[in-house]
Image (cartoon, rainbow, N blue to C red):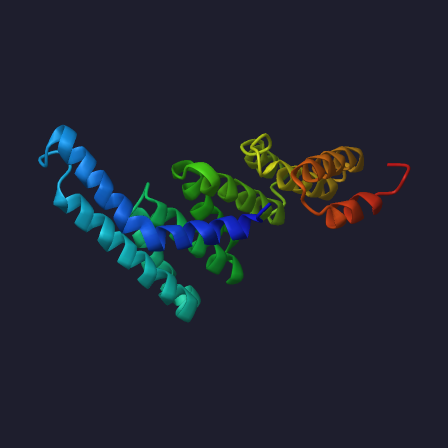
Length: 207
């Protein structure tokens, strides 16, 4: 079972290699059914431009960090709803968090969570919950985790993170239950459980 970071990297690689081809196929398909006036070559050009802009944004963020955040945020807004916008939002959140601006990182992830679909949406929920926990906004973190708690492939990580939040709140009994659920889900998925077992074993027996 891939980690959330591996899933994101796979999606990035897939869209980099196949994104333009997928868009071209959609253009052809829509053209056959609805005609160019509804979905024409301009759409393909727009998607190709977004692909190139995303690559530029990612490179600028890697090279310049916080200095490139404003242009990256602008791209996320302009390309809202696209896979490229979601991936860029993840990069914005990462760089903002590294710069100590958790509020900006949370805003970026909230946008990604609301507009993304599939695995990227679930990854956004997990990352959002981590940052909200870091801000000690525990209710918000638990709410974010509810969005992904029953999603196959994410159950174990969501349960483990729920345990972390509850433990931070001082709810050792709740954390114990969450960690046990995480171990069960991870075992079923064939995912290593050493880390979550360590967390579980660190809870005092009387808790």
